[in-house]
Image 1 (tube, rainbow, N blue to C red):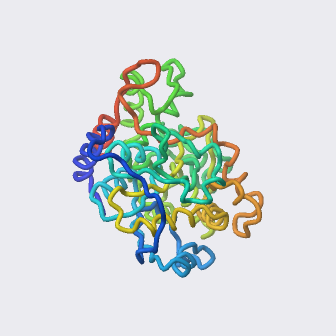
Image 2 (cartoon, helix red, strand yellow):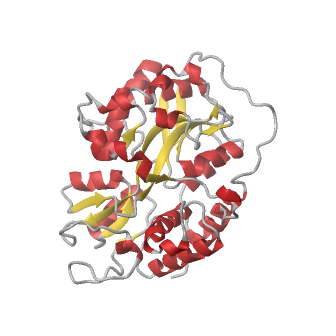
Image 3 (cartoon, helix red, strand yellow):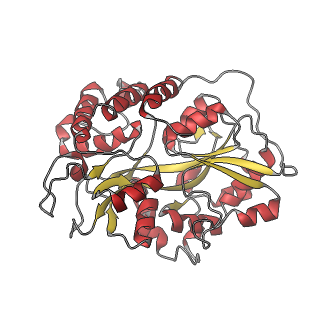
Length: 389
């Protein structure tokens, strides 16, 4: 599914309008036992999350699963959380690897069902920091199985930056870079309303007088200041990114030198000997903690549960972390994995959990009894900014 800028206006607004609607209908029930596999399972996933060795033969956690279970894995990649929500709203899929800015919308909208963790033996091995995380746990019920987590890093061209840039200002404020040229026309930003939080995180440090504490809880004054930064950034950005593989090509061909990105793109470019590296700047980083969630109308529940158990195996977790540059949700995957290595988890940020502002859908009612700007407004304004040039 592809979305041009006009479709995204309608799409994000529609998604936002149901973001925190109260799910209604029949009483929830959860699966009580796992039976014979139905022969297939359909998964909506981030690019690079479900690999069968087609990109690199060394990375394949699908083939063995299919052989052992008889469940054929069908994958639909999605470039943004909003696209994932749209696909799950349409139906026809069994699972989704949802980030925190999508997961609670899916729960509130009644699109996913409670997970019976008793039917997932490896649940006990999940990182204790993730088992009851608020982005998949509601009223003590689990609606997702933790998959991977990590930061949104600053990727930069090492030929331009002999020393790593220390601040997100290189993508938010017009300036002369170390090569003597302006950053205008040479930086990128993420094509998704949740990126507003990245600008908020930057202003939290750059303008402490605004009093920003949580980049997902912005009152009107804070929010307006963040929007002004993004409007100025629009003059610097020639092209926004939402497709990981397209961004990889952009960095090779379009003269780009800095952008927010996932470790996945960094790893791919480094493997191709491109002059890039990444850093978490002084302001910190937003990030994602993804959970595998089961559609309420799944036609292949047995295969879906088999996949969720498979997804928690140390081998899958370690291989995926190595491939994507992420952190496993199963700590035991951090040792003894040939691809990840025994230092891979530390390199990918295992100890930085508390430093990451994980994606979360903004709500009007926020901490301290304050009124904050909700996601619907974020979506409308960000689309307006992107389309303003």
